Image (cartoon, rainbow, N blue to C red):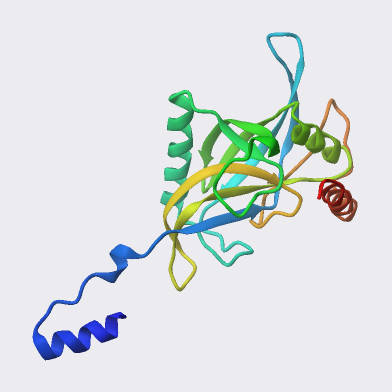
Length: 213
């Protein structure tokens, strides 16, 4: 029964129509961001070099390629959620290529989030690339082209595309992202690996996906 039906009943009987907005379930929201991250290497305490991506992970006030707009306060709340989780000792794992569900799959983990903060209207994050199978795949792909990031979470979207009640789960790494400014500049041990090879990157991803299917 929709709101119009309830209004007709209310007019006839004096019953109060319920607030149907209270029972609207949240959608799963997957947003890919064209984010040209900076590629960093840093020495760890054990003397090993660690590879990181750093750049814009979430953008506020901009209609993305999925037609959705995230208000600044929703992005700020997502940043706080992630920082609070990390302060509580939780590891924010991410995957190579985002799945359509919210569950994190251990066999697809490629990186972890190590920091995230607001910079104006944007959330800027730093991802540590791990030595897992998927992490090694990311390292190889970065030598041949660009990668982007994708946020995964839940929320409500109105008819104008504005997102509310956004709860973030993680930040994934993807080949083809969806927010206007999410491709960072790449420098890896002072070497530039060619940022304009998107078609080659896509071909490599497709070949790899076929090999594991």
